[in-house]
Image (cartoon, rainbow, N blue to C red; front, side, top):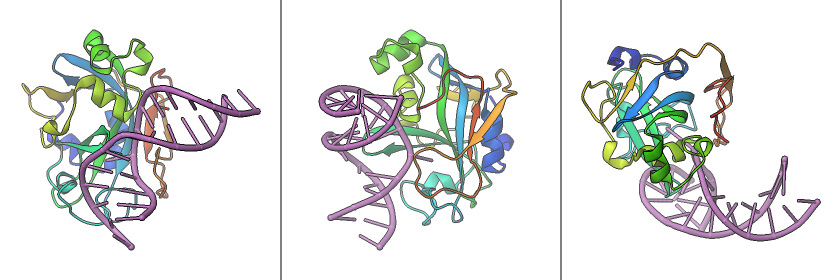
Length: 185
DNA sequence: AATAGGATTTCCT
DNA sequence: GGAAATCCTATTC
């Protein structure tokens, strides 16, 4: 697994460098092809913008942990925490290319098309069975059910505004593998 | 292809 | 009360 120093860095750098890596969960895996960086008090679209709450607590803590939350009362969204403790930050995993356990993902999503399995932050959580239970899990631990490993490097990175947020940051904080057929939206 | 509405928790005004 | 880091379905062009 990738170690915590990797996540103890600026959110945008982590978001960029996660592209191409493998997210593994219970024998299933996918290549990360789309991410977004989130910050704290200088980022109005971030959950951490208004300070600590019960929900966003993990964003303020150690790097390399999972922050899952329920979006629109319906879908879980998967983040990994970044920055040193005390400095809020996270990276949202927005899209994957399915690698292993595709049958299991199809079952979880009740969808047949591979293209529609993990191409969105809500979809990929459903495909991999990621719920609130995983909140706080470390993605750095060797033998845990969920983690992030080194993968095939993405050398054609695109950048854009973040998706679905009304308050946009002055920087482009969405990162994606330009050549992937598995981007969201 | 583009647009509109609904499901429904958590947090803010 | 209303918006939000979404997705699905239905309707209209």
